[in-house]
Length: 279
Image (cartoon, rainbow, N blue to C red; front, side, top):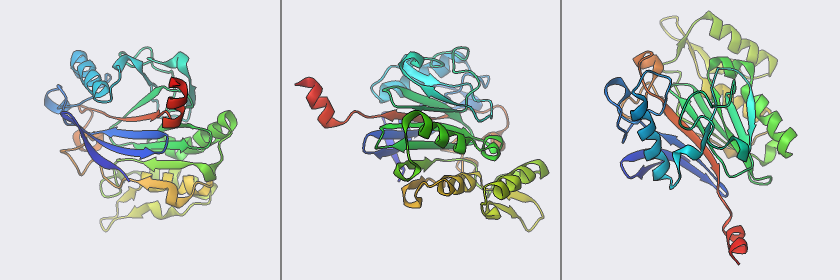
């Protein structure tokens, strides 16, 4: 279950597993102004870069870390999932240019902090307590329809030996079906996904006004379960980013001139392992 936690002036939704943590920021506690108020963490949205970097430093400090140690990817609404190790530490942390190119997901089994950005798309975390590996995924409608979750699960298996039945997953705040009205292209793509993966099409609905609405979080939950992730191990936040304007930025609600929240994943060192190292 996600819990809203205070980190000094910041508020974050947090979920802990034995050995790992998922964090999703809210918009409170930063230095950005106007439509980016206050904790905008995106450097690519037109905000003052110095304000964004200060926001990133505040977030990192609240986690007792350095902002320069985080790792981010470019996020192009594709399906590339990068396998991150110590060599990637700091990429995209303080600029756009050094972010991992072309990726919308990152997985790791090393002590790095993965850092992805959102303003309606679906943040998804995966964690394997057996292999001590996990990561974070950015899934908009294009990534969802193209199966980025399936790609992430396949990468977890091929690189770390993960089994779906061992995994924990979390699906964070995103635009809900209440607010996510979509056109024919999205409907067609998601219906093709449902048919291809033998999913229920209940995550697409027609309103009384004859408008299509999509539940991207619901689709991704179905994909996780279809691949063998146990339902009871999937934490679903169920907060709509468009509905909760005091908590979240929303591209659909506010337009292009708005900020970004961050989804963060990192592994936590086992207390027994720490004691062994110190002895």
